[in-house]
Image (cartoon, rainbow, N blue to C red):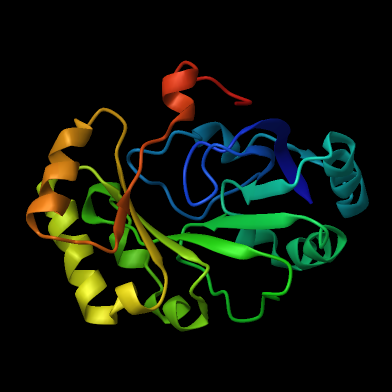
Length: 211
């Protein structure tokens, strides 16, 4: 499989935010979000065997593992094998929501799946059929860059009744004043939405790699 980087840091976002985590960032992505902060993962990387990747994870000894990208589902065959070698860990797969989850095993992982908002420029690529494969422990994440994005996310939540199905998180695009997003959620009484920040960008420099 083609791997951009493997590193150990604090999880900066999502339902395991704050936990020491081993990150496996895979190379390649089928989308080009306007706010992407990992454009270096589009092409950069080196080929590694699945066993070598798992061995690197074992060396760190952390309980939490995050497989991210790029877009991990572009290497689905290798990903399936890797998951079977990481079944002792709590594994999160971060995916952009445009590729099908249908034939992935749920035994070894949970998902943090984006639903792209208009501000990403990629919202027409959302595969909403993925929602039926998610469980109550999985996360759907909306990245919010404007009121338009917020209203779009709220509409999707209502249409697909996400509050009854998954964990829903809103994350402001880095640079958007978080208090605006917080105020919108409070005013609309979205009691089931978890507003989160990318804490690694506050601990380290926003553009830092390997953190």
